[in-house]
Length: 275
Image (cartoon, rainbow, N blue to C red; front, side, top):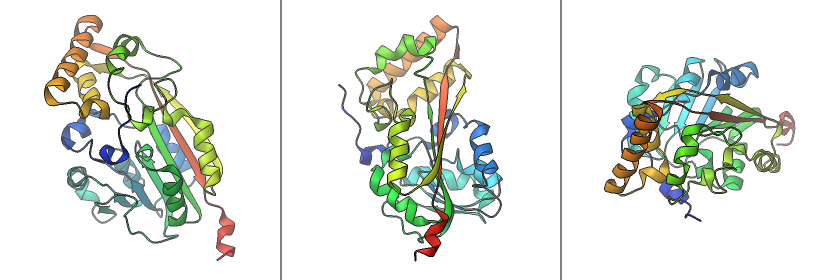
């Protein structure tokens, strides 16, 4: 089996070309933010911390809902891009260039914590314990991922190219294999939330099938951590082959099957009576 990329390396994997990362990663389905709004987790009065904000694919929609956000981003290059992209929200956005573990945040100081495509780069038990401490009683925790290839409905392009990825290292998001991504391992994730003290946890899978051009396919593939860490010449050859397949075998337009999995849980209200 391929080696699994370390948590430490993963935090540096996406900043080498932060603008390209921002352009290549697709937006999250609107349903994600509908869930947060409809449950009352995201609102104009919500104080939010976001783990691994990257270039703001989740940050921007939350700011648009009126949230006040402390965005925690360990990579200085991504943090700079985030600040540049969202400078018009400067009054409601604070950016901390720090790992989540080292971040200094007030206990019980937030209504909502979120992590989009980031939480698998943390040690689950200690990270969830800190998340729990940072939330006020009754506060919400949301984590979600987009899996770029639905195990329940593999698209033709994934079937055609999956062998190319087999020799590469694995992200923790796929440490157990492509058929059991971290994000979709519902029973394990729900048990971890329960063990951390969260209650009323819910889970939803959102399936969507975007049509991507060859340029978009190559750009997205370049952001995958097992590809991004390849030596430059090897990475170039890999991406050229991805592009060749998309062009020659799919006529430059590829329909992909993606699934976004979101977990939402709440810190018990009664915590306020135990202090």
